[in-house]
Image 1 (cartoon, rainbow, N blue to C red):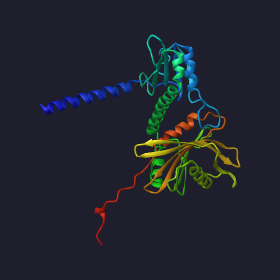
Image 2: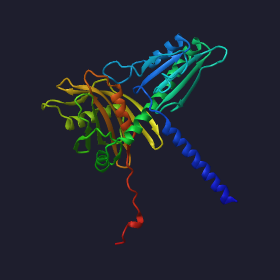
Image 3: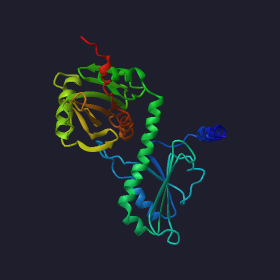
Image 4: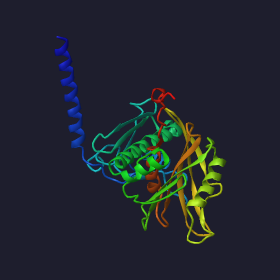
Length: 333
């Protein structure tokens, strides 16, 4: 009896998994660009409030760009034109149905990748009062969906040769986009780039001694390492960090934390420059800091989506743990 019951459970689980896989396989690809949001509401004032929150300036870019590209449409319902949109925010204001602000979302409901968000409230005064919380939550959910989508693409379309080099040279596990095929290696330094004529994207992995990941130390070490490894066309030219441009936040993780930096880079003695993002990880086993950095050079282009693609690389990166030493492998002398 116990064996029969176990077999029934296994069959049921297999059927559920297969059903889920068939559903995922049948979902159409979502439409729209990354970080584009379709906003629909039965109340124009509510749409104004949420649209303004989503359109705030993105931090860490040399020119003003919104956090999300907002497209307003419809009357608060999902129709055939919005059903397969990448990100949809539906706002409903109704004093007879709601007594507080409600926030819900569902992933991959009609397409993949997709997030469908529902915001409900009694009236606009209530929504406006709650907007700081709503704005933070909404930004987090849409950004997380986009980063997950970018990571899945990165996992499928990667550069295994570059990843093996990062592992063998730097003891770093990471996913590198398949179009970053140009490379340069230095002492405790690795640079990878797509070398594109427009929208050049770059990843650098480097280390410095100690365990200090505070902003002043990071900037000082970054400037020193980039001066040595990223020179310009002339001897006096080299990459440096834009003064006063760097912001830092701490991201807690299961095995510790990482310092996340955003800022601007410049080419000393030249007009080149752009945004960068960097994660600094304290490698306590090797008494060093590992930095993985993405930077973009895209003059006269929007840079938000380019730099956020680099962020997916950063979040995929961690330090390889040292191989444990086994006392049993020692030989008696």
